Length: 63
Image (cartoon, rainbow, N blue to C red; front, top):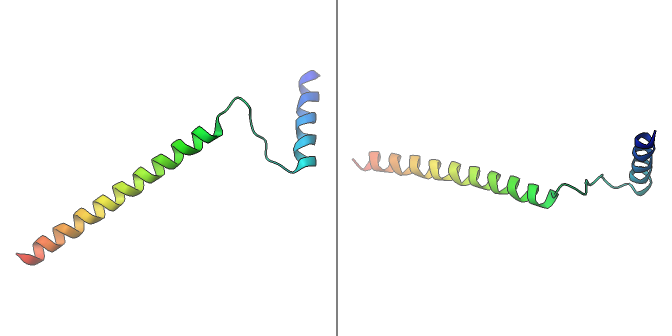
């Protein structure tokens, strides 16, 4: 019963204040930073592959 009461209190507060739930035990800033870093690295890898392919095409055109 205590768990249900806690869930209802949290839901009421979220609906009343119109804010998303933030778990106090999870460091969401660190998770966002890690996710953004991975996305950035993937973009750099794609860019590097594109530049390498472009350079290869230039080298073939010169020969």
